[in-house]
Length: 333
Image 1 (cartoon, rainbow, N blue to C red):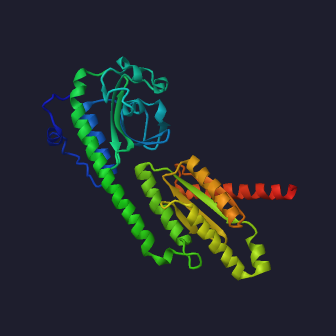
Image 2: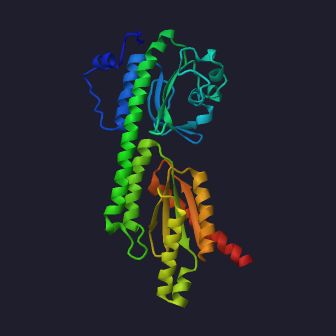
Image 3: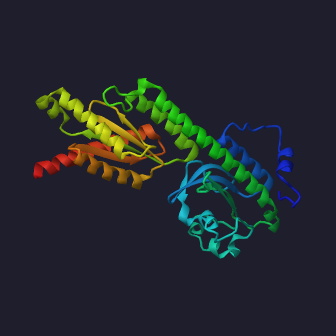
């Protein structure tokens, strides 16, 4: 169904089906309701809400009637029509996308059939790109589809405003939670303890899943710590643990979360960080540990679809692999 120029968002909402109301409680439920409504009113085979992160184009939600895409799927941003739309190379609405050179040449055409396209950016408060509200179909659409664009742009701007407000509340809530509960702090180092770490992973997994936020988990184990305790005493061991904690805090960004999760084991959750950013953090940490006289084995893994808790286990495995590698190097030296 297409709409005339006189149609507006109020008309759409008033004529929306009332038999199955869609509760709008947060950004994701608002997005879900928006996708359903747009497919009912505008047609198109696939409607998506996406997150653009580096070259990852993450499907946060989808209303699909033929392409087989679903929430959590990851495509390549650089191959998409949306990337070209954001760069200003193509229009936000293309009833016959093959007539737009930037879209006709897009690599995504080699993977899925696209003959019509709609895409509108979703932005953070500073105007930077979060992702897109977009739709595609394998057949050309009527030029009247252009009449729907003002309504779709309005919906996208409303979703952007809701996203900004919800992210602000989420950040404030995280800061309050981190500062409030001393039971989640390690007495020796004053960073998070194992209980705090477990709570962090649970809370941040919800945020990562909701907003498609990338994250890395870094697992750290101090090498030779038992030897320090045995030969220099527990005071020296405690000093080493405090030194390691301070080094971790000084190397981490303000948004990263640092914890002591065992005797000489530490972990860092790097938020809004892809694997490349995680590797860069590890490189900085190794240099900082070296300057502080600390030997440590380190493993880093970017968040997987299984969640942050599972990612931490993988980071632990990577850390132990690093420990074995370091032992072999020392043995052969």
